Image (cartoon, rainbow, N blue to C red; front, side, top):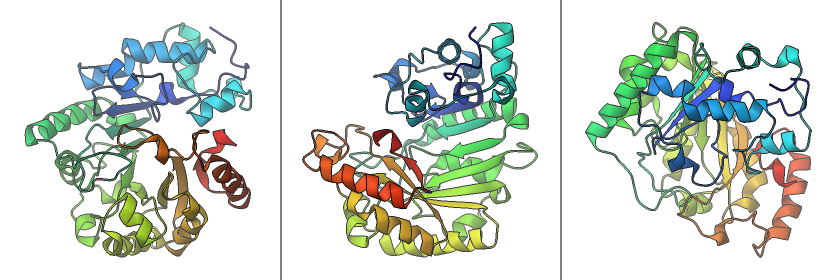
Length: 341
């Protein structure tokens, strides 16, 4: 194994994180891995056994030997690692990495600190950056996913620090996610875990909130909006702007009263909305929310004309000029575009 003082040792994710994806694959981050990752690394086995399967062991080994052979430049953390802009000392490495160094093995006796449930794409919206049609899986599919998640949490829940959902669907529309939040999740099951919720916000009103058994565990709510104006929102997400504004005001009240400590709103930057990036930051401030920006990914529902950050895009140079000025002015925002700068 390599020396931890090398600057390559900066990535904790495969040693701490486990994410279930709807394809059956597993990941440890935003899945900024090699092409065909989402089907190549499918694991049909027991969810509780995924944490130390062959793929996870190989991924950990690639971090420890400094090759990062599964990672790509889409990942801002990998870009920092490649450019030697991040360092890690033996003291800050974390006991999971130290365990793998000391044993020479990629298996871990302790479970993940962070689990993300992203294995249900069911949603009440049909956003053009995500899907071509509405998705609502059959009840038996939801039941299987629920059983899988419960098995995973029964094994690792006692030591889990964060449970997140969802990066691929709408938690307040999914039968499976709602069943977890209304029936299973509680302090007895997850004694130290915080819950992070990613949502489109259109269903999260006071009635929905009161129906949750786990509401005292919710630490962060992040609402994906992708627009700063009603006109643009209707182009990228649909006709729910007024309801969304009411629900954002409700979430703001939860945040103001410290019921929910962290509140974010997210913009997926694309050709239709990049000129509203600054306006979006001001919209966030009206709801006491922290703005988050990330680049749109070509899931297959968009064309190259939507990928404003492609160098071949006719507005690329204008976008990059705008992005540099924006980032200088709003350097404090959470941004997953800085690898472009």
